[in-house]
Image (cartoon, rainbow, N blue to C red; front, side, top):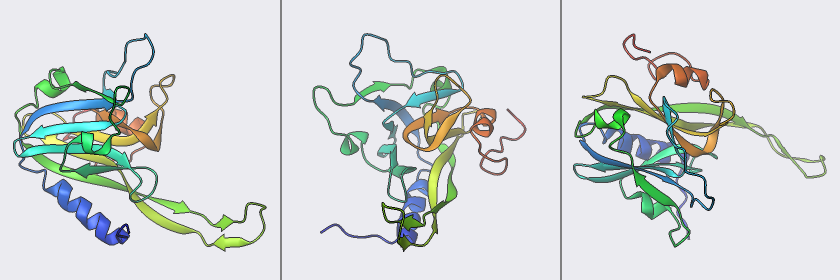
Length: 210
């Protein structure tokens, strides 16, 4: 039988994992996506953001950590696990592919640098009310839930924070994305976060830099 964890307990457990990242040193990073069946080259570098569809794996000084989208709180949010990303993927000959990203300029300057701060953005959404399929009897009242839709990490060696967002980008419209999506966007610019709809404040603040 699967153990049912209360939302408050799940939130506290996630916050502990996130706060435990502070002080850890980044020594490697990998992205993951579904298997590329077509002849077209995979495009994941979009300038001020990267497309890590299935998730991100950090190699830290004390071991791996994974940043993925989950439905723990509500479909979909971002979650952190202190274990390899492969633990959350269905592997096989045509399973998800992973590639190294640590040599990219956005990451090269942060490599071997400790994480100096970590912060989650919790979005409150209203769910329901629910009705019968025929539109008749009301089955439940409206309720609200808080979902961790983005993670902000700061590095001692990086000029700006890095944000990880559970969102599906609209590649034809670069400044638009569906947040609460089942993909991961890795964002390197505060202005990009604003264009995705995140409000100014502690989660976006970058000491006056863009």
